[in-house]
Structure formats: C-alpha cells, structure tokens
Image (cartoon, rainbow, N blue to C red):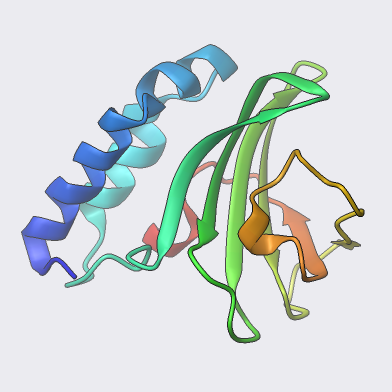
Length: 140
C-alpha cells in the first residue's frame, strides 16, 4: 500500500503502463481532465483502488474494448466495480455494486460462459448506475 504522494505516482504509472491515455482518447474521454486531475485533487492518504485491477478488456459487442476497474477478489457485500466504454457513439461510465445503493437504476447478472467481463466479478449480481461523471468514483 502506497502512502500519500507515493500512491498517486503509482496509480499514474500503472495507468500509463496499461495504455490508459491512448484507450481513453480513442473513446473520447479526456485522460488528464477526468483521471489525472481527480487523482491530483484527492485528499486521501492511500489509494482507494489499492485492492482493484485496472484493465482494458476486449468485448464481443464493443470493438474498442472496455476499461474495467474491478476488485481483485470479491469477498464481501458493498464492493464497487466500474467500467468505461464507447457504445453507439455514447461514452458510458457504469458504477456497479454487489449491493443495492442510492442511484442504482438496474441490476446486471452475468450469463454462463461470459467472456466479456473479468472473471473476478462473474459470480455476483451487480446493481448499477450510468454515471454522468467520468471520473473514477473513489477519487471524487
């Protein structure tokens, strides 16, 4: 676990390593505005995504793929997962939780044989909202 400023540099380094700036640019999301500024402004002493994996995942119906930020292991209720993608010309930021939350507008249940989503999240049903805010939830 990185402390204060160290975690911010580590988060940015990880994003660069997975090609996040290029992916976000390809779907019309401003990396600096929504991700770098959110991290820089965070008052937190540790990274709230320390237990999460940031990954660009291929998707059978979304040619550009999907950015997922999902828990490394889902062991409890109230776990969040986020995804960003471009579909039908619209940028989507979905916030999902394995428990109901204020703002949830639906529930998504993985189907058997799902290869479009990370394995770690497939054994749960997920309440979701489509967020207007493109910043990562835990940095707001």
